[in-house]
Image (cartoon, rainbow, N blue to C red; front, side, top):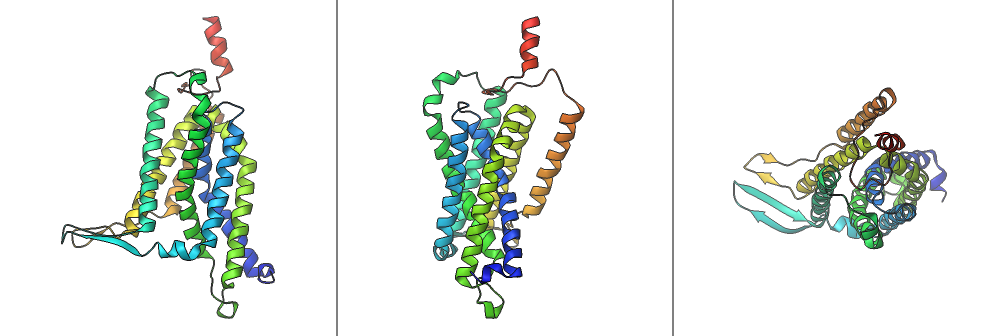
Length: 286
């Protein structure tokens, strides 16, 4: 506990908490879109369960950090000479599979919202909360691995005499950062979800972000598996900074659009539970 109150530990805690919140944005977007398909009374429960699962998965993985790091070992290799080569690890399989799932889910949601058939909410709401929680749990596993690997890379587990925080000190810092970030995300998850579900363009933008994150996970999984094509072409990971800069810039532009132009003929997405009052008035007048 004495290590926790040193300036270096406090800086590491604040930095890691901020990073966990940034990395959790994709989780909140996914939660907002999945929970938006539920009944209004079930949406807060789905968000709370989803974020609690995220916290539990991260803490479990932190206590099993030795096992997480052991997933870097090669499970099997593929060698096709100068055509293709790969050394698949447990981490690469989990992250690559998560990327595929995120791509499939995002593209399916965009197709359903723009071209899908209208569905009555009564026929689907009885079992959709269980399906939503399962989807959230599956993706939380992938997000948790990515988050924990980033945290381990930031907080040194070396002994204090060697400039680190020690194993117990580093573990305490990472757990506190996870808990604080999840609590902050719980506070803002409701308003963020409401804002996303009230604005169709934000929903499509959020799904587009999830496609970008899915591609990033595919690239990262391929990098961890050391995918190599030919003699010199090896797959590298996509820097997260570029990705999150594009996300924040796109959101900034969209916020400006929402403030400067309020269209009366807004696009109405399929399965959107919140109906614009102006559109209702227009329908009654016509």
